[in-house]
Length: 480
Image 1 (cartoon, helix red, strand yellow):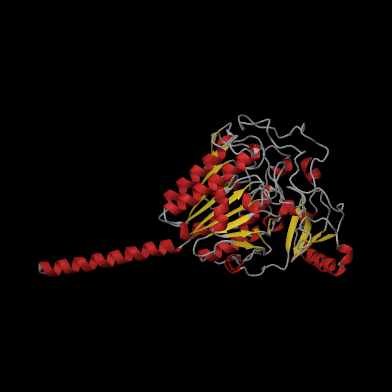
Image 2: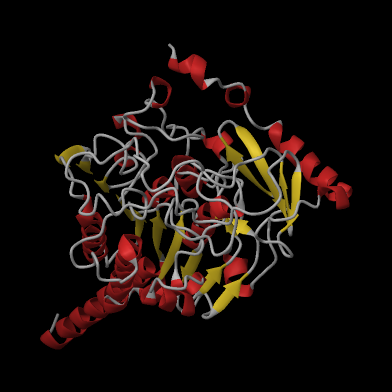
């Protein structure tokens, strides 16, 4: 072979190799990235873009302006662990089995609770498709080793395995305790730094980042860079730092030119605790009023989700699982009931709700049915917790070790986040949330046909709640 022909063949081989390399790179880039930022106990009205009169959240405001802000996004329980399991499985708590909060310092009956091996999480399905996966923050799907994030589809983990007011407050890296006691004031910053590091490490391959922040769950804590800087008290400082965290992650995606290939979702696990804000809704965390079940949700994906949308469609955290799978090109598991629906038509076309009804649970019982504008409270729920307590209340879950920099600035029961007015709670209350979003006037007597329809939906779903849950007696279990 003469030299000219040899050079020609080399050039052809080089071009073919370059084309194949480019095709492989484009194929990888075609797989979208997913980021879920999940705040803890963030109220529907805690963000400036959701109407807070004082808190400033410029980065979340910008995220909403560049995407969709949902006003009717619901969680299935008004507290932590079951809501998180629903987010990651697309299933109601009575299906995935995490229907109350496991706690290492709790009663005997809840120390062994966690996500079952038989459940399929977003992280597991994405990992099977070659995604890099990281959970950084609060897990709360079990704190025994068999429940660890690294056993359920996450390549790595950094965080506290449960709520930051449970003891001991251990910081876990992978499956090892790396710090005790934990300076909680630094958690938001540390979680953000690890999240950014993960994005940079995996910028050449598809990734799933699940960032369930510790804040603003009590005890509230902000780093020195934000403490006493907002002018709106410790709660305002905490919100400002959460907003900064979102801004840093979005900036990283932009700087690495990953912006248009990444779906970012920001939401909360349930309504607020004392000091928070529900934007005029009734109730709070641990209640089945809108203040406990309706949370902020912002979705952003430049080029896919149109900007400046305010969407009133009724939907929920059960929908995140099938929405992400659809965008990743992964089929929804067919061997189990998936309660969620693909939310992308809602986010891109403001399509009508894909649900005939949404259900909520509290304890071992179904509590509410939401269908269109109507919400039926099957069982009554108080509008306020610790109603007889004031600013001298002593939290039985006091801080463990060096956890906070402002132990005397925590919000107290005299700072309820939601409305306390309205008709007294009784069974079978009906509200029209379009006309009465604050759930002030029970109209059950005026609309018996609506009550009957929603009660029928409740009874049909109730048959799907296992007897082991419906008949659960924590008092009997705790004595064993």
